[in-house]
Each structure stands twice: as C-alpha cells, then as structure tokens.
Length: 179
Length: 379
Image (cartoon, rainbow over all chains, first blue to last red; front, side, top):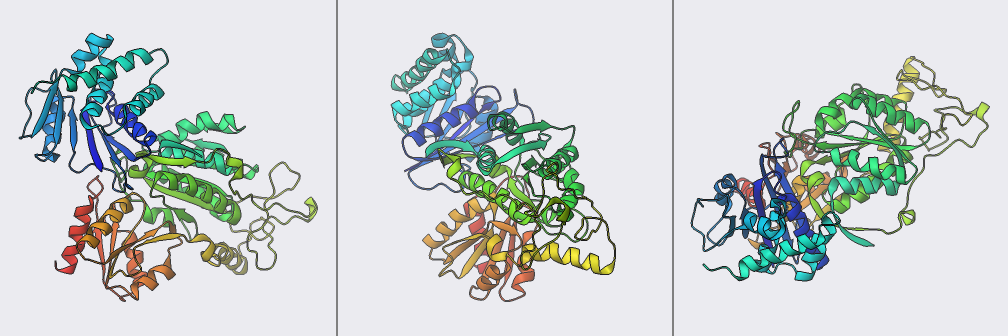
C-alpha cells in the first residue's frame, strides 16, 4: 500500500512541518517514508509545497507525480496542483482560502481548517496540525498513537495540549463531515 | 541503532561527526546550508570548531589550515561557492592536504536557481581547478548513503592525502528519509593519515617508501618542519622546477589514486545481470532510474541500472564490461550531458550510448525516463 500526499499552500502555514510529522509517524509505524519540498526564495508569503510518500515497500522516486491526497491551503495552490491530480485524488481544501476548485474530484472535503485552529486552539498557526488530523482520519495512513507522538516530538514545549486538541479537532472535522 | 527521519544534509553532518571531523570552515549557501547550520551545533559537542568565514574561498583556506594542523576538516557549499573554492582546491591537490568538500548542486550557471535540482558540476568536480590534478568524487543516492559515504570520503581523504568531493544535489540534500544511525559512533571504522615515525630532523615532507605512494604527514606544531607550496616541489617540499621533479611530482599524484582503483571505485549494479539495456546514473537522478528499471521489467524489457557511487575516478573497467554484453546504455543525468561524454569515451562504440539529460530544474519522473528509453528502442 502506497500513499502519495501533497501539502500545498503559502509559506508560513507550516505545511513542510506537517509533511515531516506525517513521515515521522509513518516511520514509527515501521513503514517507509520520504518527504521533500519545493519553495521559492521567499520563506514567508510565497507558494510552498511539500510531498510525503508512505509505503510498505522501498520508495525511490521521491516526488509525488499524482497525489492520492491533495491538501490545498490557498487558492493559488488549488489552481496549480489540481493539474497534477486525477479523478481518484481526494482533495481537502481550507474553505477559508479556497473558493473555487478546478477539475472534477470524486472525493472532496471543504473543511474550515484555519477557522477550527482559531476557534479550538486560539491561533491560526495550529492549522497545519488540524489539517494533519483530518488527513489521518480520512486515510488511516498512520496509527493514531504514532501521529500524536510525532506531533508532540516536533512542537515547542508548552504547546503540547493545544496541539493534541488541534489534531483531534481535525479528525472530528472529517468524522462529522456532511457531504 | 536508532531510527530517524533525516535530511540528506543532516546525514552528512552525522557522517562527518562519526568520521572524526573536528573542523568546519565555510559560508552557508542553499541548498547546502543545513550542513553548516547543524555542524555549528554538533562540532562543539565533540570538541571541534566551527568557523563561518567571510566567503567560500576563506572557508576552504581555513579547512586546509586545520588539516595541516592535524585535524580532519571539511567545508560545504553549492555551485557558486564551489566556483570560488577551485583555486585552493588545486593547492590541496598539489600540497596533498586531506580535505572533504561537499557540493550540493543547484541549477547553474552563476546564481542559477537556489532551490531547484541539477547535476551541472559533474565535469567541474573533475576539472574545476587548473592544471593536471586528480581528486576523488563520490555521489550519494539516499539519506543513509549520505551518512556512510561522508565517513568514507573522510577516510579516503586521510588515506590518500587528497581532496575528496561529495557531489550531492538538491534532491538528496533536501529530502527526508528513514535512516538507522548507530548509537555509538566509536564502533565505526575510521582512517587517520599516516604520521612520520622518523626523527623530526630526518623528516622529508613528500618522501615515500617502496610501493606506498602516500607520504606520511606531520601535524603543524608537532616539531616536524615542512614547507607547503603550490609550486611544483620535490620530496623536501621546497620548490623545484626541473623536468624530472615535475614528472615525478605529477606522476605520483596520479599514481597514488589510479594504482588503487579497486580500493577507491565503488558502484552498484541493480538488476544488470541479465539486462539487455542499462541505465547509467548517479545521485538524485538515480532515484528515478530504480523505479524505471522496475517499470520496464513489468513490461518485459530487461533493463538494469549501473549506479556510479565513485564518479571520479570513472568506473572504467565496470562500464566497459557492461558495454561488452548489453545492447545499449542510456545515461540519465540532470544536466545538458556531461557524464555521458565519459561513458561514450569508455564504451568506444561497443554499444550505442544514449543520453536523457534533464535540465529544466526538476527531476525526471520514472515514466518519463522509461519513455525516453523506449524511444531509442523503437517501442
């Protein structure tokens, strides 16, 4: 089983960190994982993309060609990366930023990711962890225990509880989602 | 063993620490910056020193000085900085100072594209500094190999008193992958340069004995005095420009490497045993090629991969052997066509040699490489 994930949005949203955390959780589950990213010269505000591939087998080519799951956290990312998707790609958008999703997608989740981060945890910067929760709940690509450990292994001291809350809130967004 | 998710650049840092590197001098540049950043944290933990210099040239100068002082030393950079380092790389060749230089390639020429992958410095690592000279160049394909190959690079530099270049690319430098790191680095085999066992007054800085073409090297400040120069010199280390001295000097610099190819040249054969066609590749580009080989075999095409791990000296014997039994070789590299020239030279018409050079700032997807191969096979 192989999962190809693409996290796309704006620099500063923590998408590269989210992809790293997902890869670390996969490794804790004894799976293979590679993570890569592309970004422009500007660290914040520019477009940002991170890929994460999880597999039971050895992974050589490390970039995602056609994502199984695309997370689009900006309108620009939605425009740009839906071009790499096919009809089987599951697309998750942050409904705050993405108003118009090009292409036809069998499964599509418009989730209030950033809204939830603010409402549940008080800050937009938890949006990446909310998104991770949604992805894990949707795909079960890593165990719940491993994703919690991986998140706690990466986040600053003192923010553990808020991050756990963000993760759970993201999972609930998918579990309670009405298509 | 502890299992971690590390970047290629981070694995180079851990490899350097494991190999006993105690000094880093350099100037940070994308996509190699993490090496400087993390060695700045790691070196003081093992009693080493980190120095951020005013530019790349000063960085390699400090590294040469540290090595002369008896410490294992390295620097890291990308294309623009590697250009600046060429002058002193030549000094390290002729003065036989063991150093390791990491070049994490990005798109060039000039400032090019800092965050995009390319392999445009293949020929530069071989011929970048002026004059006849010989270096060792290795190229890792994965994060674990970044670790082990950095240790090997330091060991080769010490053993042969030669600059060793770790030629990486943005693909491998920036990607994260699973790696099993040894818990105790002291169990890893490391090599220290030979030091003189004679009295200081009897020391000849470039004197060799018998078949061993690598002279013992004294640490500066240890009581052994020697003269270091970029001029052609004799065994005393002092300049001597006679035809004989020049021949002796250059022949030894060549022979100390090329008479030990079996020790130096490493490579990997992936499914080449029964292959009709072979892809030759290295570094980040080879990651595509493994998948292409597997895709081709699913379609009934017997394709293999020959991956050069030591790029220079070129794995001549191995490529000649392949050429004698396959129907075609496709070279895949992320440039306009550099390594292919050496493959063509060595194959010398024994079989067709094709090139898939990709230079549009992204690596090739496995299917793209397969389509290129099939084009040459008329399929």
